[in-house]
Length: 310
Image 1 (tube, rainbow, N blue to C red):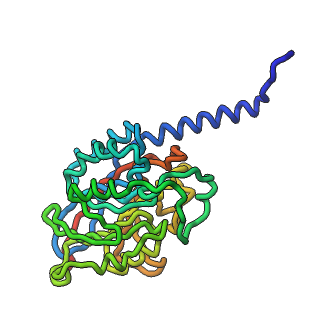
Image 2 (image 1 turned 90 degrees about the vertical axis):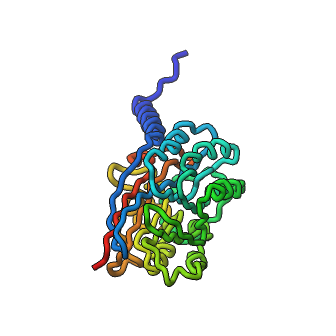
Image 3 (image 1 turned 60 degrees about the horizontal axis):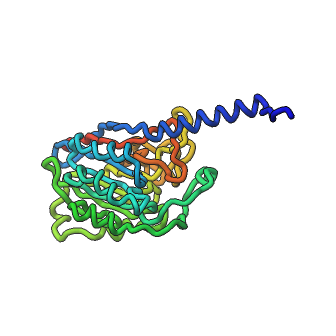
């Protein structure tokens, strides 16, 4: 009996899909550090180096990712800002604590994303093609997120989920105002911004920073209206599966052209404002779809120069 013959066209398609899959897996592990330089007006001159990490989605056994994150301490940032989706697997907690140990010796702040609270669940990739303006309701297993909160907080990092804090770095006083994850409706920026120290109004900080996981416009608009000149977020993965030079999805209500890098932010799309938004493409990938195309995983180093306003 003659053997079954696969049509040449079908065989070629299967081969191309295999190559694309392998390339996507490889790129998802091609970690890099991206440098950005930004100049902001301020009351005093100075410089501050910010390490922005996000979307590790760490799971047990991801040794290459662990080595990369642990190595970032050598960059000697003045402050680390972690914008959520850090640990996606309770079984990976001990490894996560180990990879974070070098960074936890530095000053830092953090917010959480949905994958800090809930485990990953399979999702149809077409789900991400819709532009999101509402609230998503996670269906994954509830994670032991308090262990991560206590690990970071125990090292002195400030929890900015709907909160704010002040700290000294690089000879400057930084004030950081945060919001919970807007993707799952846990944001209450106004409540956190109102929680200030008694003397903060009479003693303004040298630099204000806004910190959130998902860069939804309702949060960014509120931060910009509050006079925050630089906002930091993650969540988007830079689009994760991109075309050359172009993202396809944002997974929030930002324009797809703003899903990574530094951009001037216009609240409501109206009028000029002295606000900048940095969105990192993140270190990890969606745990149930661990591929990237034309969008390498990244940690970002922001060298911010402050110049005195005239």
